[in-house]
Image: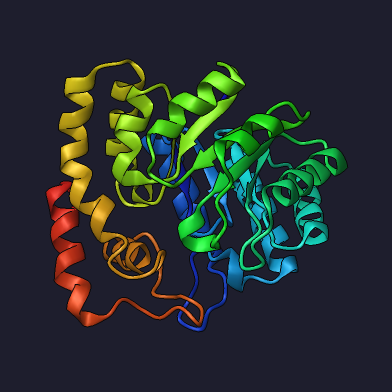
Length: 291
């Protein structure tokens, strides 16, 4: 089981929107050096919605190549079409990913039975460890704990990224799925308490900018050191909040440029961070000791 701070990696681009391979290499090396536990390639923060299938598969494979066994790589492979999710998950496996992260099907609002059948179909089609991802704020679809508990019995389904911020779910899912089912927060703002309640880590936007501090906070929380975990998280609170001042990954990409980690590039329909938010994000970075 991967435990600790897992980065939901941005996909670096140039100003024309082409994928920036040199910056991708720099980012992977940076996370290895800073002690990040694993990388999620081409998740929501990686602009999966604007990469075509060939690019999606290529970036996952390239991150695996750049990681070179130094850090686990999880491919973001969810889709609102079951057949597309299977195809992307197969690409991740063929590209050498250690696991896949599958967001609940978005926009078409499946039933709980539909969610169960969708994820079971992907798990049965592709033999790779799979992590469910529940983020109803972006998908308009909430996978309930009861459905997760059904799915944890399916071969290849090994964990959940839970991004509702509802900490009561940690207890319910842990009781239903047992200690070997990985529970990751998908909400940076509540991730510290999520881990103190028995979660295994966080798949983090904030870790793009503050990987070492996120790792230290996660280490403390997983060790049950509440005082140290909360103290470290206090330095990150503003980032947790202000990296969502506009739609993710708009603010985090702006911050990454300020740190010299990548070029200024993002794809439509996303746009560059509005001027009115620059000082807010800069102040949050300064509070975390990044500037």
